[in-house]
Length: 382
Image (cartoon, rainbow, N blue to C red):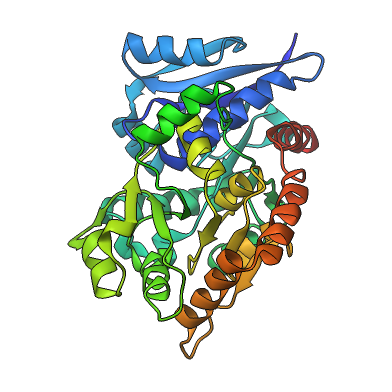
């Protein structure tokens, strides 16, 4: 009888899959490609539409089965938060997030395992960026994880250290990194690539950054840096929405001394579109004040793109001296340091070339195959 690893796939069909949806897709695909002898992978999904079930089965044809719970996602999330249901049964369950049936069990007797994943600590560090209900749910699920999870996966050692300040998981924390999302490849046909660039209205030369105008993301700092005297007049492509609350990119750019016509917001769902955006950029800038993982850096590295990043612990860990580090500091001066870094990369070809080489080298350190094998090993160890 095969050993079955059961992975929760709900986020793949969520209305807004987000970064956890991308993570779930990539990890599940790699788990299916690296199944050890005598093992199989089963999917778990909340009660959904037949079309959603078909999407999952088409996306992951190697699944041995798809377990469908009796409750829809919203009701199931509430039930699991309160520990009111034992659905969807036992076995080895792996959740790409905190959405999991966390309940009392003894794996030494039953063989049941539940592993969850923590991607960031925003409900604790920046609760204002989430709804009150979301904050309460995440905090409640982490409390249940502390009591009942057999292991907790995090993408970086930096996040593991911060998690220890919030909840004591002892030796149950396992660091398993990420990699570029599936499909992040430039189309082989040059005409198609050019057509995508034209559709996205990409300028001839630009810096690229991901995120929103939420203060912790640092895009406001970057715009202020680009507005400093002496900084090259290079365009900025923001992978994300043009607005955040009442703030608008054009307004913030204008107030920072940057011509709003030089700032472009693009929202890309197709990995091939993202590949085109990254591959044509002059440099990738990651000015965030706090991150749990450095996946965006890894994706930029995969194109040999020069990377400028803050000294946020997760970025420093992921980059490992392969990017240009800009200290955030405590007493100010961050925008001036960002301005100097951008100027160096844009105006000094030797700096850009060195960063491109180190980026390409660093990219080899990350693969979903390796991540999947570590997940299989984690469950074997348990």
